[in-house]
Length: 465
Image (cartoon, rainbow, N blue to C red; front, side, top):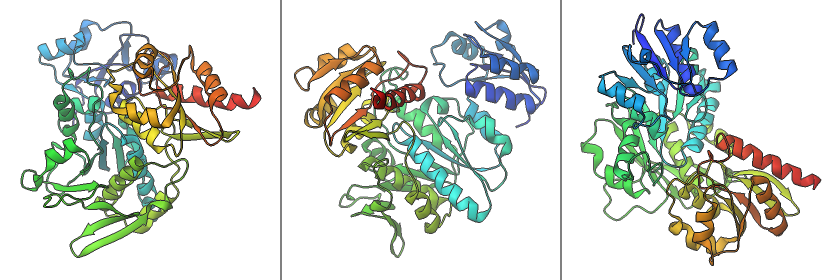
């Protein structure tokens, strides 16, 4: 992609916006970074040092006097600046799209509603282990927290870029082409952005494979009904290799037999002349990494490793040493026989359900935040059977309390610190206190990371109470 001398505006000065502005500048473009709010002092110093033009507290007419624009994923299609860009025929791209055009490394893309961070981290760990033996580097970038554009300049031919992708990031991808694409699942989430249309949400996810061709691989979760329906009999419809994985038994007469599957407690890869065992679940399931959903994530990671040509030894070594992802069912401490678990990354009902199911016994559940149109009916019986006290926080506390009244004992807390205190008073030895909000964090926190860190700080403070 030759952008020397091109005029480009970047809308949004978050991490990905600043990163792509710097990449574009290094590649010879004339860049204007425009932010509706304020730009941080550290970012301002960096922009000045690189002689990148910027503006804050609003978008001027200058953002439209460009050859193309890069839009940050958090800016919705309904934003006035987006509508004006489209009305004027200005091409709009995502940071992922731009970074991929300068990427020399092999790209593994991972998307899905839930499990994509864990799956991406697993794949990255496997590639790191293999790379130490084979002489290449693996980079974990994208929605996982490190902008793709910030690292692409370091990547060389033969390296691997493991890119976690949200639907928002994929919306403005047009030429993005991963060598290996993984879809973990598709369940209701972010439907406010997609006018409560699940098909529109799914189509945004499906953009991950739209440019794949004969030598590429698509990996999908055959246990997910939307995915299995979409890819049933797909071998004749798509030019790339399709690899289903799953834990559930293969239906009689299925045309999509699982190629990576769970046989009892053993993960196996289906081969033309039989099944190749890779490892057993007891080798990697630990207190900090447990639950059937994580077996599904491992199946996806094994499938990706096989697509990249990675041997079983590196796969086993990486998975046996894996300890989970921060803020995703993260074990924090055991205090007086009670396990404290940080699942701040659970921002939807399906993720909350997975966390409750993974708790070995009963739990005190802390939940709530900014509601995204949650329907709690799907977890009602699970909460009734496994939760002994539900502590509601944040903007959604009234909705949560109203729905679960009479189903489970309830408390409402004004702050996360109060919720931790109430949980400490209620939990008994053998139980867990599970912080799994099921909602976005933006009512009380900057992001789910800040929310999870505060929870962990509160738990550590319990020792001094």
